[in-house]
Image 1 (cartoon, rainbow, N blue to C red):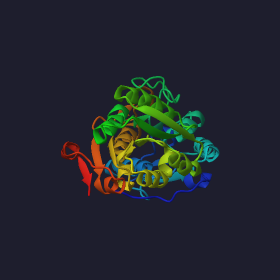
Image 2: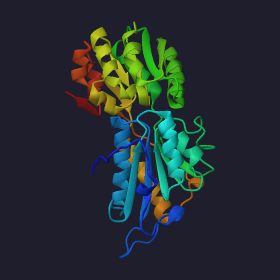
Image 3: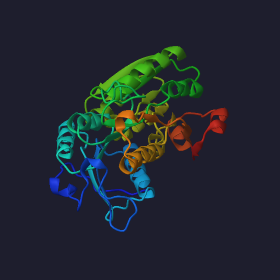
Image 4: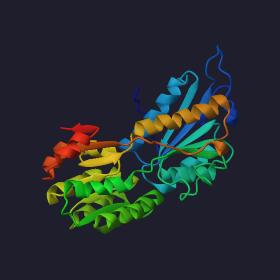
Length: 331
């Protein structure tokens, strides 16, 4: 069941109070049996459909595991609205709270929480490269109090879609946030994949969402590629408008962006990724598993999603073979 929770940029310690809270030992025993009581803090870097879906999937997994908000579960959901300073403050407040577990959604939030919260379990999701981001020692053996799920995309397969849509394409424009480690990793992967496809890469780095429109409009390329970049995806409508006006395909890093108006992706399902992270949380809260020995998990299955309405607006003819191989076609 999908549910949205109020998002605020500031955290007050009173919001995390729970009767008979069990601290970092996995919650206290609820009266009447069933799942123990637990307090869970959630730090989300910015609000956009993919990260929202990950959060909703996480909460749904907790509910399926026996935790009901208002009964034996206290949730405190905080959103930094894309501001690193706010994200740091949220992390600091969670460190001083009575939360039994903290979830961080997206790399900037995860880095802040991992640095501040050292005495209780921390999970992350929607993080592309947890090792490069300094969150874990390795994917197999995290080694500390932090583990979670990665949203590493099949970037090479996504770049290959450009040639499938337009065999004569010679260039691709990529917009990314210069301050996001996850984006830099994806851009390097995209450049390698583009070289294999014979595509020249034109990079446009932004520092905030307000710069996305100008960057997108400046491209003189045969396609545009947007990785799973939080600040760029938050301003995706400006990129969609540029692709439509230039009559070139927009390839996205995940399915929610295609539903919003990008043309195509070979990507993961963020709600399922959130559920997967929620199942890890249940193992920590209920079974006492140690994050240090819980490998970082990924989603093995990806989906080819095509938006034919977007294709029409961008003046792109989608090959029949690509349509037939699609897992989801938006018409």
